[in-house]
Amino acid sequence: MSDKTERKGMERRRFIKRGMQATLAVSLGGVAVASFMKSYAGEMVWQIDPFKCVQCGRCADECVMMPSAVKCVHAYALCGYCDLCGGYLKPNANERSTAAENQLCPTAAIKRKFIEDPYFEYEIDEELCIGCAKCVAGCTSFGNGSLHLQIRHDRCKNCNECAIARVCPADAITRVPANQPYLIKGDFTAAGDKAKKDTSRMSDNN
Image (cartoon, rainbow, N blue to C red; front, side):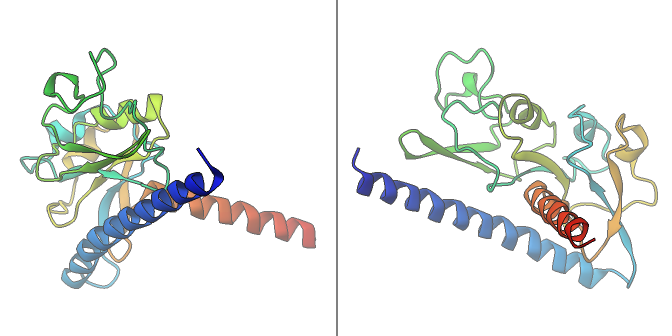
């Protein structure tokens, strides 16, 4: 492959990734605005810390909503766009295909789309997602951890005592401000890197 062709492929992948990031931001942003408009100043809502979550499966079973208000979200900035995706394919899959018997998700809520060799894009169909975290466990164990769970506030009833938080073995569900209701993993990573750099600069200055 020539350098020109390789650069063109990289640019295409970068464009696609940015587009998917924008889609996620618009989707979550719209729900965040709706949640904020319905909330009083200073109101808190429930959310999952993706770095504490242990993918126990209780989010699918314990939520008072049916299906659960917990959904898988995809931090595209962290995704490797892998052909062999641990969040999509069963560990013992016969082949890397969209056949139902090869998919890890029990409701086929993850859509796999070929981009260009060897890259594939994965998108969550939230209407089908039940919050079981099987894809999150696979992505965390065998991938970059770009798939993670979040409580969607267009579905959540914001109970005084969250039924899932009560049984969460990792205490991963906590209260966050209603005007900042989502803890997206890519944002966490970026914020963490910035904090480290700022701390380093402060140390240097001292």
